[in-house]
Length: 264
Image (cartoon, rainbow, N blue to C red):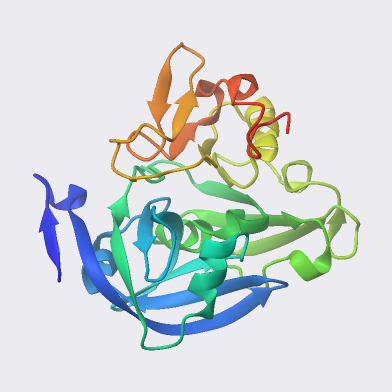
């Protein structure tokens, strides 16, 4: 079943019974899953995500940034971090998942910047191929800086005009963090663990960052994805985010007991 709703074309959200079309490994324990979802493929922007449900699977859907788009197909990148994602990775070509999207507010690249740096850590590669494609289409020079703990955990796929690698153990590229390895540019996008994004906020307050948080409904109803703001109060990452100006988030107020907290 497929249906769409919303007032403006760019806000349309579709519920698609999507066929799994392929799977490939891009790093140790990191996989890319392709699925047929033509309506979402035609409208998704970099930084937006889909909420997936499958049977048997977890009670709540799981959010995944859209990694790439190829004609009628979308791709996501994931690791088996729990029982739900392990079930998803065990599915075969031809199996189907319920795919809701595109959801959230993506990166606003706008017009004007001539250079852009994409800073990703670990699974933070997820929104970057689409961001690289959109930035290239706008005429920007794209530098992609990708970091991980070791060479084996670096995503083997990348894009843009220049790629800079960084690893904590120095096994590939520069030794240290992706934030430290990144050059300055007119516009900076970042995605990865929240401690990395907090470091990006210190260096580039105007950077656009895609935050990591738990999500339930993906549509702003359950309030499970609250993000503390510097001006006070909370936002819903699934609705007003997941992309924010880096300096607008109160990174120290992220719940300390959760694994995505800056202090965790």
